[in-house]
Length: 193
Image 1 (cartoon, rainbow, N blue to C red):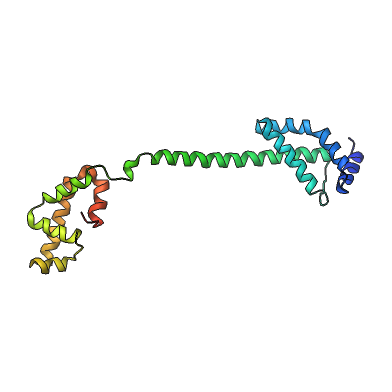
Image 2: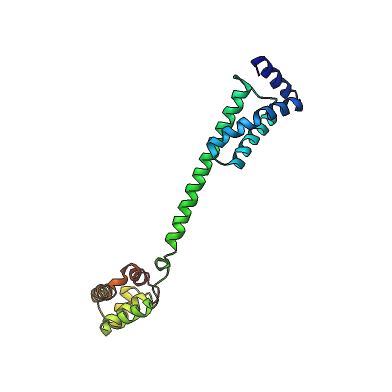
């Protein structure tokens, strides 16, 4: 098709001439589909790329300004549409891969749930504390009393309570060091051991 014929076809399409549109569709569809296939490597997707370009051409026919040839415009549109599709697919695939990797990481449930029997081990370690230290620790962590309140209740100085708590935490850390990543949360959160 020479430039004058292309301009006539384009003008006819602008004036809603379906026959002119169908002619350019029939003449260009197969080469455009083969061109799209080179990018997307899938026949159905290539067909969709070409159909999308023609649909857009028809929808925008009244405002369409083509400075090159119509055929060149169609090939460039198919190329751009195919590249956009590939970019969206790449981003979507990357996102899905990231979600899959994240899901696989989360299949290690041990990071989310305390080890079975851990609470009993913590209770056992607390019970192994000397009696007064154990009492101070339980008043602080299980009952949530402040050091001043514990000191008043047990008739001790606040410094003694602080020292006993420091020793209790040190002893518990040592007793439960193999669970340090979980134990610290339970001990320091005051979760009522």
